[in-house]
Length: 430
Ligand code: GDP
Ligand code: IMO
Ligand code: MG
Image (cartoon, rainbow, N blue to C red; front, top):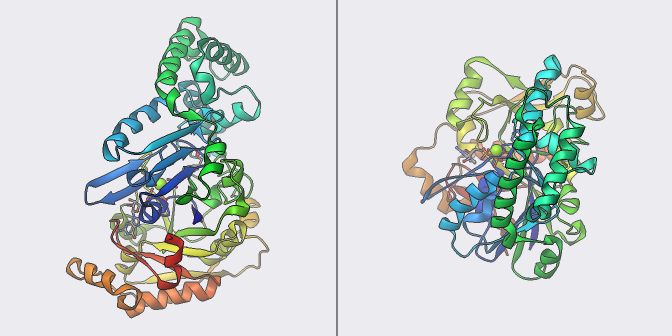
């Protein structure tokens, strides 16, 4: 099977957990966008693992690919490689020579741009993502393949810093000595990574009929640079279509597009959020779900599941089936709401947000199923969908009828095993 798994909202939907669950020893997992702004947590019997650059399937996959659509901080990559080689000794890692290189210069510029934006700030992760993509598209960027040639690195560092002179005032990066030191460090890490670099699109073409291909979308579809709530977005295409330009693998060869959503919404950074809640209701979900950023540690903003946004995202990504996470967390809430519609009639809820139109959610209340006692969870999982509390099944059925899509994967806990895949959708694992 060749599947895409991506988040349908503003990130942190639990993609990492779902991807790890769907990965086996014959799977190649491919990341196609973003960089260390992503943060995925996977929990197994061996502990808690955090991924920023390697795709979350890396614990079990045979191969992972870091595609050309990514922007890679090579120093952060080296650290992650050291960790995951220990966990999965047979893992083959392939890195596209065409992926962008994030340097400390990009991180400096990212922070400086946020300061200059003032009230218009985006709330970026400060990982240098936007500036690195700017360099890519202005054709001044350093690519992973450049890291094996010190002269190219130095020439490109000079080009980038000359172009960015004004923004870099007050930093070290205007001195030749600092640039030479950075070029040396990049070269050293580049030589370390060199054996892993290749033209990954050619590898994927060869792999297409061996084992499974699983494309991991970083971030969330509503953070897409084109179709998200601009400017409160990231700088890459996070929608399913981004998998094609970000890896070179045709979307026509994909079997299933799996959209992940929480049973509520979380968001980090600025921007409109119609179903956002505050006070004790938000605190209660935040604490129950551990809703603090994997990358930045920021408390995540919390809101109720928003069907107009979910439907927009399903359409945009041509989703075949939904995966829903955090059903254990939402079940602990006394009152559970779903935003069925907005009072206003918008063609595109995202455009309405971009246009700063106020959206008034119309909620329906669902019966709560309460906390699932720890001692009962394993047995519940064994029984599959039919063993779930009736109120949880009613919640699932309601979302299915409102969106017109089935929820094929149900996640009721952080650990890998706390996942149910419904009979009809088991074929996506083949
Ligand atoms: P991602 O960026 O979409 O991969 O999501 P993150 O890993 O940043 O955030 C999701 C968090 O929820 C992580 O800590 C996961 O371990 C956790 N998680 C995922 N699914 C579930 C679930 O069904 N229940 C609970 N309690 N936690 C979950
Ligand atoms: P995962 O893969 C949540 C958000 C940032 C900010 C905006 C732009 O873990 O779901 P950037 O640093 O990308 O320029 O920031 O996008 N953002 C994410 N929010 N999860 C993510 O990734 C995110 N990646 C970017 O918070 O609002
Ligand atoms: Mg995350």
